[in-house]
Length: 326
Length: 265
Ligand SMILES: Nc1ncnc2c1ncn2[C@@H]1O[C@H](COP(=O)(O)OP(=O)(O)OP(=O)(O)O)[C@@H](O)[C@H]1O
Ligand SMILES: [Mg+2]
Image (cartoon, rainbow over all chains, first blue to last red; front, side):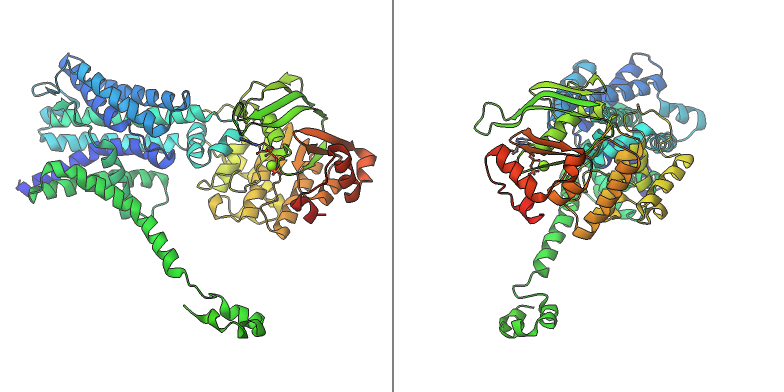
């Protein structure tokens, strides 16, 4: 296969597996309106837990589920800090993330990197049995997982609890007045979100065949960037399932851009800066546009002079300067 | 029956901004009472409604609903007894959710929520019927986002949401104050239709003295965190705005120097 095709395939596989993380970020950022910084830590946690479990002989599928639950717990910690102790969501996420850095090192036995080279994984299962390449196998597993996750989220957010959760992000006062404990809905959302992020970390570790205590650095920004890209590309979709899908598409595009940029000689280390700029610009554009529009629309004179003149001709005759500046 | 005994609430205790917003409030709401609440700015009307709804813990005293002491229950737990409409039309509905989703959230007020489907086909018929009662054509727009509605339409939907599942007490805090006069009149008419038609128990704060006299079976006047005048039945029906002003001067020892009140004479 040609080099470019390989690069493309690798990036798509990566995008799909990271897409699961983006779905997690979507829950907190888009539905709950909380930018949850736990993500960087819970992604790494999922990868580390899964890798160490596999290395110690746990079945890869079970190890992957353990990665999911580890992330879920991390989200619950942030949730408790935020709801029970009323620590602002962003700070609660930072606290968990920082704490997880030490936890992850402990899990990894003090090593910052643990390879999975010869071990079985959910991905190597496909490589061994169907004769596909590592990145093709990752793509297959990734697509299956993404479809399952989107289906489950689509169902969940249509249920009573799921709807209460969406309402919590939309109007907390209203849903509280309807008898919902918003501490519970927030806790569920943060746990669910970080569970998916942990699952994604577990899958990415299996794809790249190692876990690294830095593998989640910048995950939240990648998540936001992917959401933004997905929204720009599919801005017309209304269906909730398609919106989730657009977030995964955003992740794929993100990793494609990244792979091609690196092919063209971009330093991988600059990717964080580019992601941050992308998100900053995407968030800044609507604000800048509004300010510019307000400024452009302003006029010092009477904007509605014609109407006023029609209603009261004599008054305007005394104020000819009213027409100025139009 | 709802009873409020010796309830006081001080905001910002121990600071220069200390304010006793409720000062030994005592009164009982009988089943079926439709009470209008008047009083100057800062008299404690909203604080009283919030104290009943459980928005914040009170300093002392007791709030009982049908003999159940709810004083220590947080707002979400009392929601099963209480329907609310806020002054701000944006506050009572979720803008990004559909009309039917909003109604279905309210249809489950105070119930434990599970993993059942949120919007059921047979419930949709109930929502349609109830929306049709508002006479605003909203029954044709079940799947529209609430954010597309005008302030008055949103307030009417909020009113419906607050009463969809019959509340033991309906709290209305100047719920027409943010609307233009014509829309306010419509929402007020709907309020009367619903409260009187279904014989609900309700507290309605208003700054319009004429409305306060004309609507409901009982009127209370608040000043400095307490009730200074409580009148019902025949006596209330005979009241005039001038009577109310005189009462206020008698009870509080000051003149009713409230622009909003004076304007709405
Ligand atoms: N959350 C709060 N924190 C601090 N002070 C408050 C708070 N809520 C109300 N107050 C104060 O308590 C007093 C009573 O306020 P409240 O809102 O109950 O008055 P009101 O009768 O509803 O007045 P209005 O007619 O202006 O709505 C006021 O002095 C107000 O500033
Ligand atoms: Mg008030």
